[in-house]
Image (cartoon, rainbow, N blue to C red; front, side, top):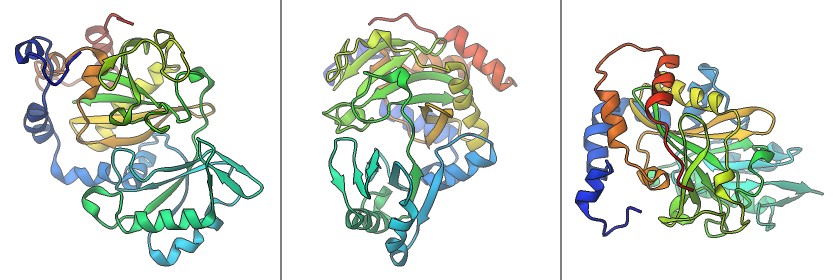
Length: 320
């Protein structure tokens, strides 16, 4: 809908926000640089989330030095599934997911087998900064596997779908769900080929969907009709997203959440520089919503009032 050659006047008419506007007016103005480490480091994010009583995936362990790499096997022993990720990684880089363990053998979502030697090599690469922002030295975080909610059967290929909500000054302004595909190698990354589905702020229902920037109506691997997608426990999830404003202190952020079968909505990570593809997934621009929130000035509102405002002003009509 918003291709690279789109008419700039049409983009402005639809309220599409570009990178310069995002960086200069919103990220630069509303996000204090001193707060970035809290969200650029997944381990620090987990700590402030726990302090705020926000649910996150259970922490199995942390490897912070090459001398500790050999402890990986002992840490993961007895766990039916787990995720190894870099604390400072971005864009899904360096995330290793094990969904099945049988007779001391470990399997990725696509069925490929991993060994203890593979784990140690991967952790060593994480520590060396191979996947981190700017190549800085990192630590490896090992978390319990999220239990896939059956409500999303057929909507994702191998990977667990997640929900990105843009929160501005505490107001949830736009949301999308990212569904993994064979093209994205089971990862919820739109640039790698995951399906982005715009989600209505007021109801949690699917509005519009794209893959590689082009509209789609069905999941490319499973054939499931995307207009059937409804996010369960939406009220709880959207309130969790809105609460990240107070938790992080950031005025403009992306909250990434998942829905666990047993524990419900939980925070996966925060992003101080959320991408703009959410506009393509929704078939709508961010600017009108951001400007409406700005027009309120410094009016004091409770989280519940902010959410009620968002439900009233940012609901959309499905096009799927």
